[in-house]
Image (cartoon, rainbow, N blue to C red; front, side):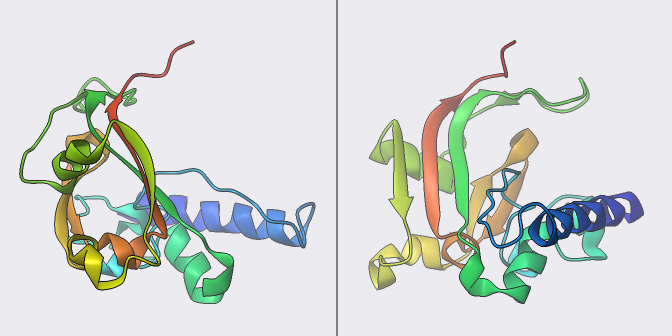
Length: 163
């Protein structure tokens, strides 16, 4: 967990450098795993043995959101099945559908879509309460998506990176 905390701290320092240096006053886009860019990592349950920040420091997105909530617009990407380009063979590289998770419910809505969350209000009860989600490496976690993201991008099937 110490290494995970150091990694998150270094990512935050890099973003701060960009925001204060060459990118000062400009908007920046960060791409990363959902939990790294979560607005409140403390509200995500079962984030794995080594979650972003290792439970010792906040996730990058959480730190940025705490400093300036109006400057953060987060889009989470979810999927139902496919293959991962995970760095090691010991990590699960096949994403399998789980009918009891949010991913499967989104799959019934469509193949690929962007869903803005901010104006859904009470109609989006499923996004306003903690639900089971399949994440990176096929690991489950629980989160109220509306607390963490402003929109969801969903695609039914993901594939490995190709050269």
